[in-house]
Length: 230
Image 1: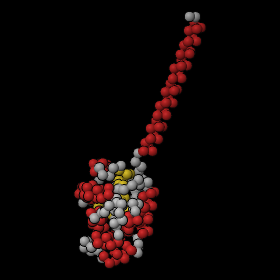
Image 2 (image 1 turned 90 degrees about the horizontal axis):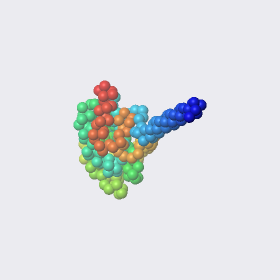
Image 3 (image 1 turned 180 degrees about the vertical axis):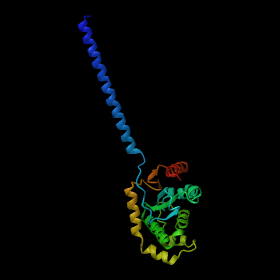
Image 4 (image 1 turned 30 degrees about the horizontal axis):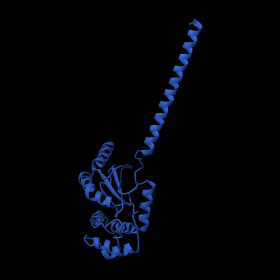
């Protein structure tokens, strides 16, 4: 091979190496972009703090850690959450004044979902400290999801077991749908936040993927407490 041929071969090899480097760089960039797209598409989205000033709230209202749960009183999974996960949250975070915990309606399973939500709003406004007592009793008395069991009569009957609730006023409040606007506003908030269903639990604006997994919920709360320096 002549010296001229050798030089030409070296030049061709150099060009091929440069081409391979360009291809590798482009492929790496595409992989990074694809990964970022997947994360932004499928990862839980963080939102600003949710305004809970008009929502039933317990715990430490000055806490920097906000837990907000969207629920439908007809939702059987919400019943499970209320009876299994919420007691753990109450014991470890609410009763110890570590967090503020708020309930928001997302009533979509049937017409009586709205009736039950209105009843909850009525109790909240009549005797705020009794709201969560009432919510627990509604879940305990929950009927089949496919039946319209949350009637005004049944909801008043449930409330009759709670001291400090005026059942006559409650009945009028439910039948007159006095707080239907508040329920509609809750539903609109849920849709703005892209709530996929109930229950949906947010910790400082970030949704926990499986609210029935207490370990996942507590991990999210603990991380928020650590970040807040609590």
